Length: 102
Image (cartoon, rainbow, N blue to C red; front, side, top):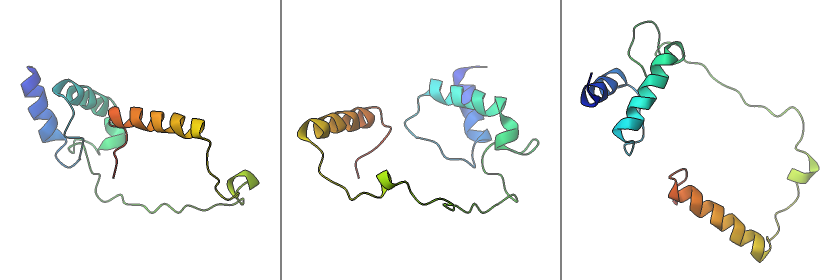
């Protein structure tokens, strides 16, 4: 099966889902392999991969223990050296398209 055939099969099989439009053909093929390998987690029976309908659930988040004191401190300015390091990491994450500037 050619890469184009695999890509078309991927798009058909994953039509209910959403994925990053910037993925390369190779990345989409790799993603499809992962989804197929773990099909029970992403579909029911022979249904297409993607949104599983009829199995909605609500997730309630609760905090049983109060936040530790270190997390309840008011924010304070970071040193210039720390800010430069943080900015460097932010720039790296943006370059890798992990985060985007809003």
